[in-house]
Length: 271
Image (cartoon, rainbow, N blue to C red; front, top):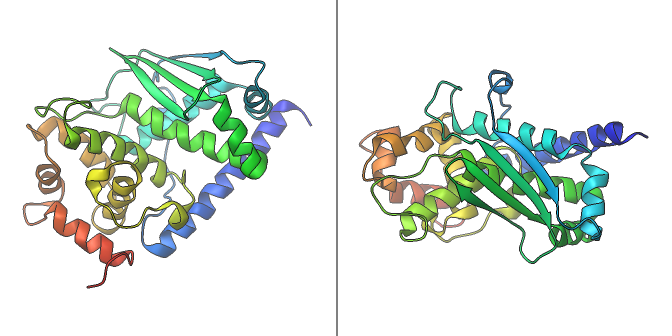
């Protein structure tokens, strides 16, 4: 079997896993995987993608290259998925990305996004690839690699709150950024459904706590919630969760009341 055929097979398996994950989420009321129309994004310039393997001798590198024959193409495809999740069309006010420097590195951690001024750097740990493969083979590596990439690419293209400081100085800013990144991952079947949904907590915990919650709001209140919530950063200044919720859903809605409703709906809290 050629590398290209093998890649297509694995991508198909990954998408099937995503749909299974979506069914699991749907059964809990915590989110549904909805098909995206990425056609309008095919001509959009996602930025120049450069791939650099800094750990070619590592086992994780060998696994990665065996499964993903054309990293630049793969990354650009996931970028368009992220854009279609965050925005209505290429005509929206979109965070400009001039380049994406994606590296495989033999070090601790999973992945992280850095850079600025439209020049993005994303590293992915070959040790994490190895760990994923030990867990459940090739399918797990592809599923995890896609999910992690969706999260990091969201950081590249998402809009940021205004008037409240920065990622490192304000917890509301931080919770929105990380919550939206995991919301995009949830929305596109990048987690294993209910199994990966954290119980209890609060949306201010960011990541999956906020991500599953945001997708639940989308499914129960507004199918375009993620796009509108992302764009709220352009209109609600200084930005706040409650201000954004009222901007998107209406003045009668309150973020804490929605969280309470969500906790009851997914069975984490009794009425």
